[in-house]
Length: 490
Image (cartoon, rainbow, N blue to C red):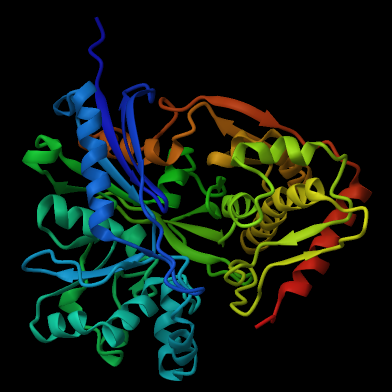
């Protein structure tokens, strides 16, 4: 008789935390999810309370443990929102300021300052990232310059900086570490050597001992007797890298797109670092202890599902996010209305922090259904730009794209995405692909198994392009016209 094995995944996202137990076939056995507060001190700032995040983590694990004894788990993987940055005291764990979320743009002045420092150019080019508020470096500098408690902790040699993975591992184990995928999003790590850029840290007066030690993604991070019942944490992956792994995109040229708060497309580039000429990011896909890292190209869009929330919360066009599809389907097309959700600028491939959201093409004929449709279609157009840039950078044409995220349930969007991509789209049977990727990575590592997800995932649904070429070309042309209206607004 087959003895079933289990593994856990802690998925700490931008708006909620989940703890999920999977069996060795990749099926969800038990799950608990908890949302936490989003703080908006002003129009530029987005913050999280790190202690509230930690409480949500503990609550999720404890709620699952009431139903499924987690001491049955072989291992636990952690996946997390990336770039979000916080500071705490090493000796006590006292948080020194709310975490600055990846969407936070208050550090634009610091980024402008960094862009004017010519002596940084060569070193920062080693990170694979552009200078932008998105990444952790400017957030670290803002905390150092603006928070008295951070300055005092620095003087006391008692300061920790970290992304959310570092915070959680510290709370679980007391160790101050991060994994290579999260470190690669800080604008402070050399992609080749997988080490911090000492010259940049010294020039900007960042205390190196306040930064976490960089470890492989698949690595024995430790245990926690009280909360985790001594089940080992053996994988840490940033959320988009966990999704890439979860889709089994382990060969060069495999590509996935995640539709969440934002949109994130990644393609595996193997052991080669591909430097983009088309506005994409070079990043680490994952690394197993004792092995060379695998790299990826990434395109990041800041506003996708968040645009639907905007329709709901700011415009009150819908009462629930699930209503957007039926509202959009009540009209035959977008009525020539286009929406560019550049609420905090444009990320890949444009990198224009001065852009702002625009709604164009309105006439007396336009109504809320056309606006809803334009919002959904904006997600497809932005994703199209990412895929187009990838194909240019790596010189291949994708046949299929793996997709995941909450918006995959929107059939109208997925069909339109297939039409605009002019490619087959494949979703997986589970809608927890990010959590599955991190959890399965931990399970494969602790059991010394090949890094392959084929036994954990099954294909769920496919969409194939079904649109007239002339209509498709016209749609894309109008989208680029709309993008031009959004740029250089501020």
